[in-house]
Length: 104
Image (cartoon, rainbow, N blue to C red; front, top):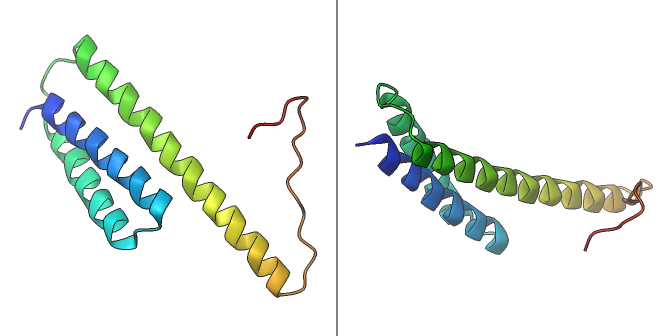
């Protein structure tokens, strides 16, 4: 497998991860994550190939999508933490933006 093909596979798997996170599809998330990890290994095995501008662009896109997944996971974890605090009767600290602009 070529590095380009492996990176395309990573990107496709990350799109599947995002979809699974949005719909709480645990089986889909596990499958997408396993595919992503395999494709990352495949890309790493091709480190002898020269890094072209296209490879760099694909890697940046994969990084951007991975950051999107990280944000979804962090939001889900924060929601679970807040719910557990409410169930335990602990005061939960509400999120308050510190900057001038709040994001929806």
